[in-house]
Every structure is written in structure tokens, then in C-alpha cells.
Image (cartoon, rainbow, N blue to C red):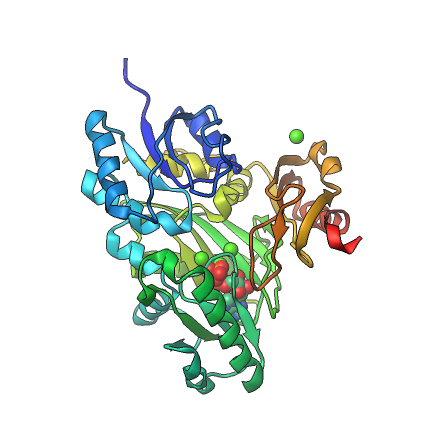
Length: 422
Ligand code: ADP
Ligand code: CA
Ligand code: CA
Ligand code: CA
Ligand code: CA
């Protein structure tokens, strides 16, 4: 009897169920490397997790790699996949050492660094806003060559943490100082060396934001979903809504695909799944913001593809990391409708008392997943010093208009209530 395939899933937060559920659907067993900050006890509770393998990846990457290799020699596994942004270089290195499918180490470095992504896009002749790399906080004046408004951001950030819009000289100076301080406090040491940390200033891309979830197998890219995130104008960029499929004309969708496929080639991303964010400048011209070489949003972007295209994105990603061809390469799945994602905004921040309205959402038949991340007593910092989404709601609908109306409903009814406010 053939053995069930086994894959090492690195740093996937166990509160996010999507990848665990996908593994179960696909008949894949998981060896989970828990994230250091995961809730003790909850890691490994998912049915698809057959083993826990704690590794100190951030503290001792060499030791973590040799422990992983020891585990492989005891009983080989078929693949390894990253469950969060920070472990991407480690997973690429481990895949190479063990001869498993994954990103090259070079590509892993590129997709972890917005400066390198911008440079590669530029060299490939793809759309890029004017940008300047800031070498130290005093050189903020280097960015005065750009056209205002601009956006100041960490080179190796995520989730819009420390991303700030500046409309003039004074606010640029302040924004660089603010972003720099947050990078030093939260991103500098985390990546091993200070040279990885840094700050980038870009010209503001004026237009609605979209995201694309893709699969890539042996260098062939398939864009599985294009989602509409709407207009976010800053000064901070808290993501709250997505819906798919984005209602866009065929020629704009084609232009998005061209840009996304070109970016995979430019970055050297040849195996796995990606989450790409773009802006439609003037509502028509797609320009990449960035690409993450993993499932977006801790896996919740899987839902957008699964519903809108029928592609079981998370399961297909696991297959690719096992060295297998994704099923949708040969068999066209059937779209199941319109998907919506609502990320409950942090609001003012503080100590959480409760998330008002969430209980009513849990019983709504349109809702597929409700994940509460911040329970009572959790302390949330507001943007730009982000500290996590309070809760996520994933739903499905019969039309885009219904999805939009439901997101509006959630925006009206879901609120984080903080202790000091009441
Ligand atoms: P992160 O890795 O923190 O998500 P992004 O580059 O995606 O970094 O920036 C976060 C958000 O900030 C984006 O989703 C977008 O809304 C906004 N943003 C970033 N850069 C630009 C830009 N050049 N023009 C317009 N908006 C931007
Ligand atoms: Ca990112
Ligand atoms: Ca982003
Ligand atoms: Ca994002
Ligand atoms: Ca339900």
C-alpha cells in the first residue's frame, strides 16, 4: 500500500485552519514546526498534523537545519513548505540541502527584500514606481528626488507594518524617522543581520489595490484568483476587505496576469504558491507592490481562490512542495461563486475586552470561517505599529454585489471593544 505523503510545514500559526484543512482534504500528513509565538498546546491539534518538530529557526538556524536533516535521515519526508514570511529563506535552504522542491535560496532572498524586488522588476522592464533606498535616517533627503505623495516602508516588512504615506517634505522626514524606529525595534535583528533591515521610499501609486494568488510549477505560472481590495489612501494602510473574482474587464485582467507572470520570472520564483499585491494606476495600469512566496494572509487568501475559481489553492501548494503536479494543471475546476474576506480592523488599539458582533457572524450560513486571533485581555497596537489582526471572517456569496454588501454589513457590526475606552 502506498504511504500517505508527508510534508514539513514550517511556522504555520495553528489558529489559522486553512492549510491544515487542505492537507486533510488532500490526504497529506503534516509534520508541524510550530512558530515560537504559537499558543502552547494548540499547535498540532489539527487532524492532519501527525507530528510536532520544534526547531529554533530564528535563534539557531544551523542547529535547526541539522535537527531537520536528522529527522529526514530517520524517516524521509516528501516536502517542506513555509507557513510564514520570516521562515522563507530557511525553508529554501532546507529544501536545497535535502533535495526537496522549493524556492532557490537566491529567489528567497529577493522576495524577502522590497529593494531587490524593485530592482529586478526594473531590470525586467515591468512597471515600477520611482523609488529610493534610505541608508540611514539622516539621508531622508535622498527621497526628495521623488514626486510627492510618497510611501515610506520597511524593506523587509509585512502586513503594512510601519508603512506610512507622506505628502510633503515635513511629513517625509517624520515618516522616515517613524518607520526607521519601528524597523529597528521589530525587524532588524529578526532577520539575522542589520544589512537586511532598511527603509524604502516609493512614489505613491494612485489607484485601487488588487491581489493575485498564483501557483507556479516548474516555472509555469497560473494566476488562480484576482481579488479586489479597494482604495486605501493612507496615511496607514490597514487591509480590511477583499473580494474575488475582481470585477474587471478582460483586458485589465490580462494585463494583471502579464505583470504577475513577469514578476515570477524576474524574481526567479519557479515552484510553489505566491501572493502578489498590485495597484491599478488610474484604475487601469497594474503595477506590482510586492510578492510573497507563500499563501497570503496565513492561508486565508486560499479561500478567495478556492471559492472564485474552484482551485483548492492550499492543497495544490502542498502538492507542488511534494514535487507533484497540481491537479488543476490537467483538470479544470468549477468556480463556486464569489468570496469575501473581512479583516476586523484594530481601531484605536489597547487591551481587548471583546470583539462585538462576532457571535452573530459565526452562525451566518454565508460564513465559512471565523477566526478570532485576539481574545479578551490581548493588547493590540494600532497602525503603523501593527501587532496582528483581531479577527478574520471568510464568506461566500452568489454575486459580487452581495459580497460587497456583506462586507459593508461586517464593517458596521464588528468592532473591537477596548477596556480603557468604556
Ligand atoms: P507590506 O509587506 O508591509 O505589506 P507593502 O509594500 O505591501 O508592504 O505595503 C503595504 C500597503 O501600503 C500596500 O498594500 C499599499 O496599500 C500601500 N502601499 C505601499 N506602497 C505603495 C505605493 N508605492 N503606492 C501606493 N500604496 C502603497
Ligand atoms: Ca510582504
Ligand atoms: Ca503587502
Ligand atoms: Ca497584504
Ligand atoms: Ca457555517
